[in-house]
Each structure stands twice: as C-alpha cells, then as structure tokens.
Length: 167
Image 1 (tube, rainbow, N blue to C red):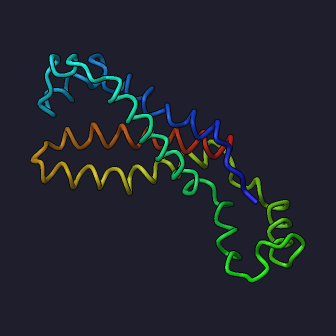
Image 2 (image 1 turned 90 degrees about the vertical axis):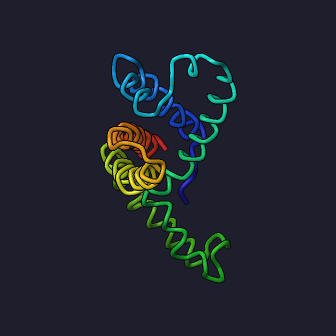
Image 3 (image 1 turned 90 degrees about the horizontal axis):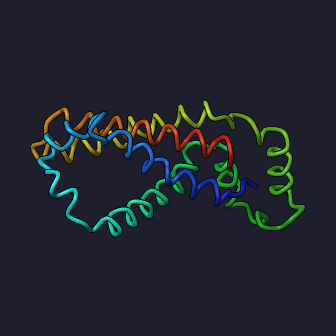
C-alpha cells in the first residue's frame, strides 16, 4: 500500500511561496503583474500579511495533498481492488495481489522528472483554464492570464517533482 509522507507534502506546500517570491518580485514580473492587476505598492504594503500568508500556505497544503494522487500512479492501485469483499483482510487474494504488485512495480515512475511532467500537465490543463476563465470574465489582459498561469505551471511542476520523487 502507498503511504503519505506528510513531511514532503508540507515541504512541497512551500514551493508556491518560494516561486511566488521570485516570480512576483519587481525584478522579474512583479511590476507587470501589479500594472495588469491594478494593484498598487500601497495596497501591497497595507498589512494583513499574516492572514494572506497563512491562508496561502493552507491552500498550498490542500494542493499538495491533491497533487500526490495525480503524480504517483501507485495510489490508484487501491481503487482497483477496494470493492472486493476481502479488501481489508491481510493475506486475502486482493491484499496479496496489492503487496506483490507494489513489490514488483511500486517504484516505477517515481522520479522527479516524472512528477515534474505530471505537475506541468496539472498546471496546463487545470490551473491555466481556471485562471483563464476567471480572468476573461473579470476583463483581465492576456498578460495577466499568462503571468499567473505560468507561475502555477512552474509551481505545480516543481511540487509534482518533489512529491513523486520523495513520497
């Protein structure tokens, strides 16, 4: 059975914060982002940072918990047999199959590169469309869409790589 490594999940939740500190800094894309979003430096400096960072870490933790199921294929083995009557009984046919399968294939595709690939796919096929849809209705520019989407594609890629390689 696949087990969750909570330390890696918690550490990977900080990846968006680290990438965000770089990505949205004035020397990278922060100035363009502020212009495209209509945010002023005074608004950024206005406080409430504990709430903003606290909820950001919490939401990133939710993302990390979800992302592990998208980048680690072995998590899905349980779903194949969980409807079997003897699923929870040690030594049963289904548990024997699961144990043998994990022994033989449990480390397949458990690399940073594989997790990076799937994390990028999550960014491209989930984050990008969600940001795009919301931004279009908010009448935001394509620069705005691409700044945020690229940030999440990079963040999900790195998160997926770390989670897949170390969980």
